[in-house]
Length: 487
View: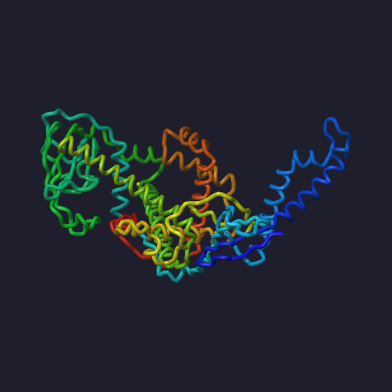
């Protein structure tokens, strides 16, 4: 009944002209109405005696529309399966009104975006190593000292007495280099214990001799091996405001420390502290490993991506960039006045139905490896090309991870999802868990998005666990620098 003619075959895009004879639709509709006439009973007529003209007037259009829709859906699905065509998303259907001399034909245009052929990658050939921090006695000593400080009782010092080693100071500060404020250097009402090395050493030691209410400018020389390269070896000045100074009133004894920690001996205390520190940096190292692995995978994927997925990701990243710029502009305005931040709709091989819904996109070409082909003509700046490249890489990574998940049967149980949501709400929204859950349940798309994200994280965990890589010893500073670069 339906004739399907391919009129475009370019990259991941396919277009077809569908045509069906009106007489075929009428014939099928007439046959169904005649069958219904045999058993139909309506008011004023006996069963099987309803005139055909009344049946046609009552239900003819509904029957014709259904026969047309069913014919298109069924025959298009059979055509796609017969020709091994896997749509990436629901094909788009629109009526073709240019019938010309074929007045007996109904014509439609069908647009199909194909699922890409996704690369296979041997993750063990990506040159990835795992950064491992070796726990030292000094780290253990500092861990125990920090534990003791957290249980030390402090009392306010007289306002006319100066800051000394071991005092707890409540401090606000901003750092400047050559008169320019250091990004993210601002702290507000931050408690620091002098000598604890919570802040850079020059800043802590430079507070000695000042009193509550003082506003000193403290000179700081960043070490040459400072973990932020842009600050290493630089001279800075921190404008400080000291709002409170306290001194230790009662430091716990060794016996009290062990009792508080529910441990019998200092040897056990040191062993327990070493394990806690190791677990902390192991978790940091694993997080770095996974991020390194995912980025390496992204750099090695080269397949064409569906344009609809790219458009969506590009627009998302562009919106994020524009939003961050608006936030920055607003912050700069405030400072001036005061004078001072998808996944894909990939089909997994199931039958795909036809939809008349239209999509929006950046251009009419499939997305190739060359990002010059995918940025709109008016968007030729470096920023837009950078966003385009990031969008391309993210789509490829998402599709690759989806493939890995399907091939390895990675699924997320209801219990796993529920436990993960509970953990996330507690970690990200402490004290606001109820409001977060209300937001999550307010829209099914919120749940679907979070489910996809958690499933993807489980897939990344699977890949990381199957990765054979060598350990690489690093210092804490080196680990934190590698993490900072990744961020």
